[in-house]
Image 1 (tube, one colour):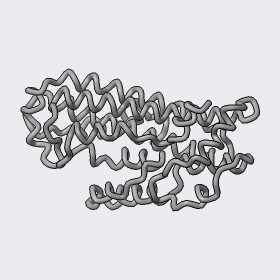
Image 2 (tube, one colour; image 1 turned 135 degrees about the vertical axis):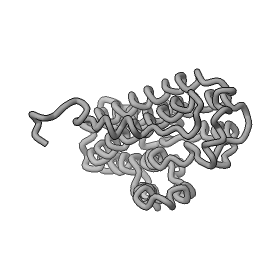
Image 3 (cartoon, helix red, strand yellow; image 1 turned 45 degrees about the vertical axis):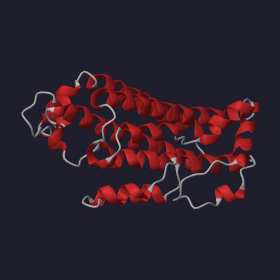
Image 4 (tube, one colour; image 1 turned 60 degrees about the vertical axis):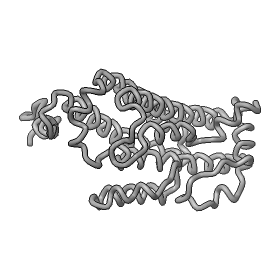
Length: 264
């Protein structure tokens, strides 16, 4: 199509986009539920787009240009967190009117969210089973689990700059969950104790903490919203609902960037 024939709706594919909402019940609030979750998936698509660029830049040693994409991701995360307030306008009675049509579906199964977690270093192959009916999504998640995380690449750059990152951390099996290291903490402590010398690494660290902070804030608001709507009952998809979500509040993508603060 010639750009002279381009319209707002054609450029954005609005007919396809606005026909993607297909509530199953006749309950008014189901439309909100669908749109909230579809919007989150669109934002996750953009997050993955930005993180891919940032990780490529970090891997190539271009730390400063990576800051823009990482900052954009943390702001998108803030918007996603705020969207829980919109969902919270739905009362328990509203939700229970259509909850049955959700069957075994659950946000727990979001492949894009699990890819984001994996790229940040929270690797968990158990989530692959939820994508067995979607080969492309399954492969994308498997690839994210198998590849070095953004944190792996950041640590490799610390080592390349001459900081004492332990060799066993640099050569670890990156498909496995990252385990905190005192040696890595010591390397980051050097950065934080001499920020003028290690300014690029220091700013990268703070951008990573922004992501982790925003993810934790999102998780906390998720817990509060779900408890407000369904209480402590089990979630759809067989999850333990609030009980499971509460355990995720303990997760840290970049643990040494939190623990070092106590030792400064």
